[in-house]
Image (cartoon, rainbow, N blue to C red; front, side, top):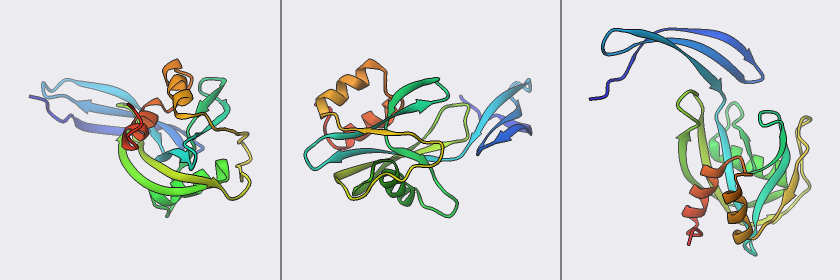
Amino acid sequence: MVYKWKEISRKNICSKYGRGIEKVYFEFSDKSKNEFYIKKENNPVFILAITQDNHIIITKQFRPGPNDIVFGLPGGEIDAGESPEEAAKRELLEETGHTGTIAFVTESHLCGYSTSKRYTFVAKNCQKITEQKLDKNEDIEVLFPTVDEFRTLLSSGKILETDIAYLGLDYLKLLQ
C-alpha cells in the first residue's frame, strides 16, 4: 500500500521571477526522514491552436533552460485574478495575434518535483486579428506547420510541450 508522506518542514531556499526552490523534509511510513528540493512555480496554460485551414500554430524562440532556440506551443503563466481560460485566450493573442474557439482539455502536474499545475487548452478555427504583443523578454516567431509536419516535429523531440501537444491532438481526434 502507498502512503502519503508526512511533511515535517518547508523552507524557501531561493525565489525570483515567480519561481523558487523549497527544501521540504518528509517523514515516510517507516518513520525515516529525507529532504527534497521542490520547484515552486506559477501555474501556466498551454494551447494547441489550429487554424481554419488545419495548420497548427507554434512558436519558435530562445529558451534559457535548454539554452537554445526551440519550438513550443503558445502559453504562459496565469496572472493574478485571471482564470486559466482567460489566460489561454490572452496568451494566444499576445504571442501569436490569433484568436479562436477555446476548449479546456485537462490539467496536470508539471512533474513530481514541482508545485506547478499546467492547464491544457485547444483553440479551433483560429484566425489572426492583431499583431503580437510580446513581453519585453520575448522574441517569438510564429510558424504554421500542417498537422503531418507538426507530428514529425513532435517525433523529433524539438518541441518543448510534447505531452501537451499529444493531449491536444487526441482531444481534436488528430492522432490517427
